[in-house]
Length: 364
Image 1 (cartoon, rainbow, N blue to C red):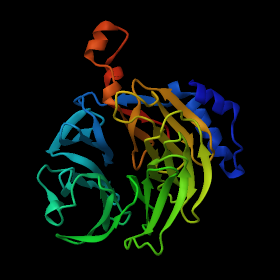
Image 2 (image 1 turned 180 degrees about the vertical axis):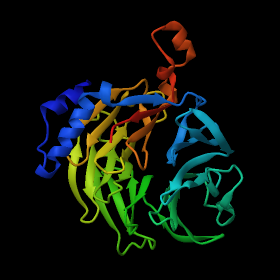
Image 3 (image 1 turned 120 degrees about the vertical axis):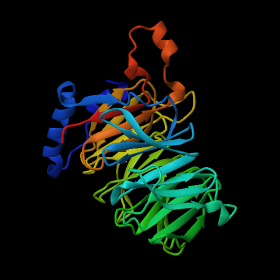
C-alpha cells in the first residue's frame, strides 16, 4: 500500500447511510483483490504511446503515436484492423458502440464503422472549411449522438452537427481565453463542460448546442490548471482533475462541489467513471520522461473511500471503463516504461511489466 493509501485509511470519510452497504461490498472486493480482481494486458500491442482509448463494444480502440487507429480483440489480444492517420482523439458513439468518430492533427474528421476498414459515415477535411480548423487535440460526442465537440491547439472549440445524414454541418464555435485541456458533455446533453488552464484552474460550462456566453457559467475547480474531466453515466457527478493534485466531484445541476479527493501527489491527467458511477479511476501520467505517480487509483464516488492504489510499472496516462461491465482499460506512459533491454538485465521482469495497455476486471 502506498503512503497516500495508508493515510487515506487513517482518515476514512463519513459515509452517508444509503451508501453504507455499497461501501461494505466494494471494500470486501478490493481487500480480497487476489481472489476477486483479475489483471490482464494486450499482448499483441505494438509499443507506442496512446493518444486516445475507448471501448468499441468488447473491443479496444486505440489511437497511437505511430500514426494509426487500431482495433483490438481484448480477450484474444489480437489486432483486428487499423486506420492510418495522425489521429489525436476519438470516441465511440454513446448509442452505437460499433460507430466511432476520430479527428486528426491535420484537420481530418471521420465517423466510421469499426466492423469494417472501409465503411465511413463522414470523411471530411475540416481544414477546407476554415484554415483554423486544424491541429485538433480533443473530441467528445454528445449523449444523443447529434453533435461532436472538437478543440484545437489554438483553444478554439467547434460543434459539428451530425443530424443530417450524409451532410456534416458546422455548428456553434467558441474562442477560449485560456488553454483547453479537456471537454465533456453532461448526461442530459444540455451543457458542455470545458477544463481550462491558468491560475486558478476553472471549468467553463456552456449551454449546448448554442455555446452562448449569456447563459454560460464558470467555476474555480483547482488552485492551478484543470486538466481532466469525466462525466458519471448516471448524471449524478462530473469529476475534475487538476494540477494541484486534487480530484473534485461536482453536482452538474447545481454547479456545487460535493466532494474532493486528495490521494494524488502529482497532477491528475486522466479520469473515468464506471458504468454505475460508483467507482472513479484516475492516473497522473503525462507523456514526458519524468513526472507522474506509478500507480492506478480507484475511489468510491458515493462513499469517498479509497479502494485501490496499486503500483504500476509506469504512470497511468489514460483510463477507460467498459460501458457495460466493471472492466477498466488503462495505458501506461511509454517514455517511462521498461523495455526488453531492462528485462535482460533483470530476470525478475516479465512481459506484463513492459506492456502498454492493461485491463483490470472487477466483480459486478
